[in-house]
Length: 139
Figure 1 (cartoon, rainbow, N blue to C red):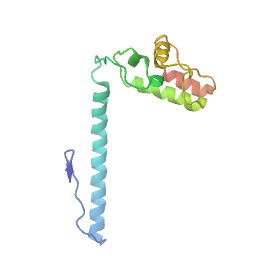
Figure 2: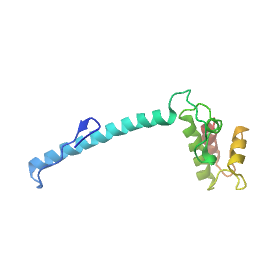
Figure 3: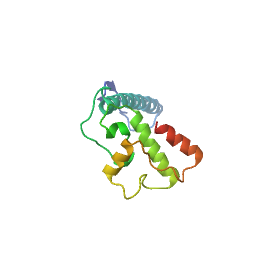
Figure 4: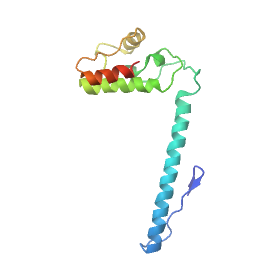
């Protein structure tokens, strides 16, 4: 089997003699190497596809409004910090025990407007150490 510029041998014997056990260990190592390489290359590719060039700007907003960072709502250039912002919102929900970070009456446009005004979801019910962590994600 050959993929991603590396090859992996498949075991040819069906038995479990000493030779096939060594071969299986080699095959397992080869598979691990290929998977590790694939993960590295996929991470690089995804980062390029998701973040692109620093000056690349989207013309539309894509994502769930509750978790979008201000840069995304403004369709401004952005980097991996938008994911840190979203992780902060998730942490806030987990620690507050809410299934939604913004008030139920807020629609997408209400959330967009609030975030653009510099507002963030309420941290009521979130412990002090978790509050510090969430606030640091929202900087």
